[in-house]
Image (tube, rainbow, N blue to C red; front, side):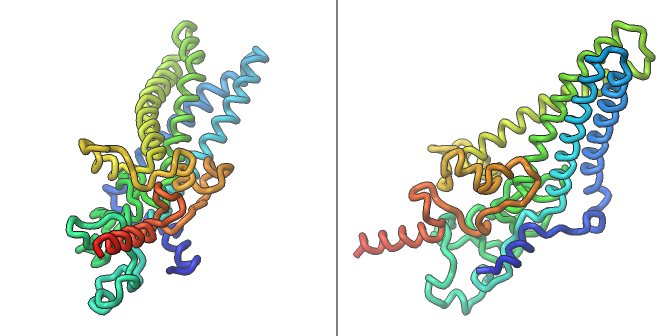
Length: 315
């Protein structure tokens, strides 16, 4: 097993974003950043500040509250987005038990990690590109050119894989983005109505309508996306596992299901108070997972028990 420092390096290490991104890879990230800045400027400078300069004390008070709340949401969204981009999703370690080594293969079976997910032949899953064995829930990403632990999907909007090490930050990006655009959509309705009914400069009316339309569209889009991720999180599934299970009998059932709260802790961390904070609070190593049957066994331990039971029944 790896030391805590190695684990921290494997899951939470950051890298120089600008040096690892091509122009094509930077474009989606810059596009998202542009949308965030645009909506922030419209909401703060075209909606909140005019309210705060109003003669109506009620409007002034609402404008201050809305601006402070939106500033907080913007900071949390920006931090979560940066952490999702810069945090490694987690890769298979360069240790002997995961490498393809004839000497390791020749050792006793107990020396090599066992997994629940295997090939049809019962052999361990192997990545021909990385020349390593795959832990449970691990998949190879051809964009990142690495086997990603508990891989959910590769996301071009963060130019990174979403996996064990950074799924929480990706989830928080969707959460804070949804709350932010919902705030813009609902709070700016009054300003949009006033801009239409009262004699208002054309540029201000256009900017308010543009911001309201953009925020409303994103709210609908993010609501569906967030609902989907809430659902697969509650089922202990990743996006890849959801696609693999579609159309199969007993679909959408995971061997790693620990119940809604247990599944949330597995993805967002054991400390409930830190679930909405862009702070890494991982439990486990991403190489083995607790199974639903006992709630106490790791996937490798459960597989060993299955093997021993089958050998006894055969005997």
